[in-house]
Length: 394
Image (cartoon, rainbow, N blue to C red; front, top):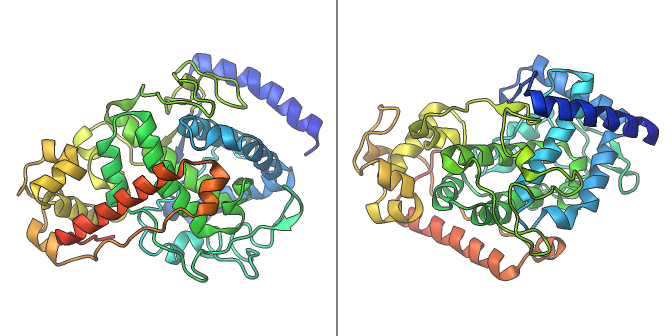
């Protein structure tokens, strides 16, 4: 797409977007787990991506992400900025198909063995690169135009395999233990966010990671987790600082967009005209594992039961909402198996997640001491749950 066309489109979008923000959403799309899409539904998504590629939008978004990189990582603009960025991409996709919604990849479900995920099959986004170049899936044999012409690259961090990612139990713990944006953001950005990017490698490990549609799936999932956390009483929670150390609030401006952070805070209203499949308002359900990762409900029920069976001291330390709301010895939420059998017989011990590399830490300008503290905490979490004989059904 020529520059004039893109600028003209955004002038129109600015007017329409302001009108929609004032009047509310007229077209709320549902973001679904990519693995749940039928061949026909995925075909519609793939068609939009092909047309966006032809019109130059992947280069456009890679350029923005590259330019704003230090403004949107390692500080507390991370969640609201990426929500706005995702919605921007989604709005452009809706030019080609009004029902277009960015799916999410439930990476927590695949965290123990990411390379085996159906998402990385030829049916969806394709797998590891051959000579680093992706040859199958929706972006198979694509040539990307930013920062220069190159094949879309992936290079798994263990050759044909990937190190484990941060699992649902740890992320569930983070969501319960932190009530402020700053700590919640650090513990997600320095764990799951980085481990997925590094595990995939190739373009996903660069400043222009948006070239890979895995980026959009990944950040839709992170946004989904933020949306769940918001629903636990953190709907207006915005604190922390930007890259310059300036305090952030709902009135602070989003980098690149110049809009108040408040405009990106509320899913399903204003310009954020989307919602996530499986959401709800029942806090007892929302605080169950089935709202953090969504495999078969029986698996989520097994995980809930296993966590409830942990010693009270561990539940209070790592899962304070479970400790305060569900007494030890209560029945699992699906009501089909005893806590003891779930906790000590079925499933596997938790693996250590892959660490953030020195290259990744330096690239983002992270504070190495903070990253090391969070990585050490995650390993302590694994050690303590394994010592308590918790077995993960994932």
